[in-house]
Length: 340
Image 1 (cartoon, rainbow, N blue to C red):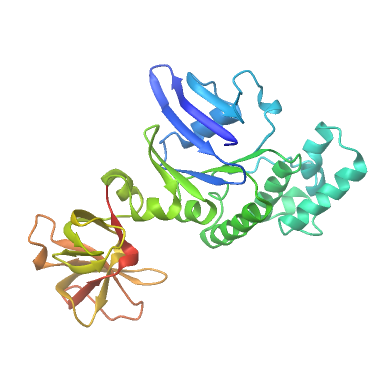
Image 2 (cartoon, rainbow, N blue to C red):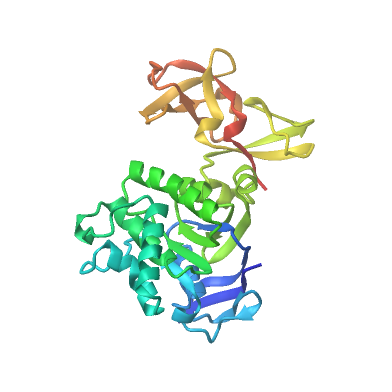
């Protein structure tokens, strides 16, 4: 393992912001720290970078303890959500800053800056003023600046959160391709599930300073460890079912769950787990909201026979459905998780 975090805790007086966290990041791997605001994600990243004192545990690189290694000697690259670019320098000057600090010859600086601009999709931007850049362009420059000294670990703290939704989505895809193509060992902090799953090979879900679950993206998405993790990952309905031969049966009908063991299981349903269909479990529309890709419904389902008799569901954007309309729902495996 390249980076190893062992039992790390961070305290501010009596408040424990990070509690006995264990994490490993392999060479060339992208790990996302995912969690709600205040969960300790950024604090943990800053502790790894050396910007926050660790009150317990250790941060190691290839087995070497970094406790006494100052920030500038850890050879880590950092990108924050606001980029923190130098407004008085042009794009070239910002990217070359770390190279100058490392006393890299000027001809090599020029080659490196050009290569990095190509890498982040900003060829020809070397002479641009920072104030002339869009938000997405500025974040690309910040990324290039962090990569210039060839860091052994890249640390990204909510790098896309200040961008609008469409730009954030596109830049996440571009960044994922860049990180995987260049095999850059990366730790990224985010509260956005789609961003984490787009960028990362593995995710670690934090809640109140503790890692609640860590694993490969598909396994965490399909098998959240408990109700808290499931709810953070978009589950809105929990349902008891019986699984046998890869199929779970419940009051909402059967659904394929090949990863479930035979016996009692707890299903976690995201809003897309139930879709309007010609046949299926009967229900009545309570409310509707138009979303970009579908119509989001709240549906009352008498068959549930529980204290919670409404579920979230989706229908095509073109569906003409209103409160009081009857509908039928079927389960879609892509929206179903096995909780616990």
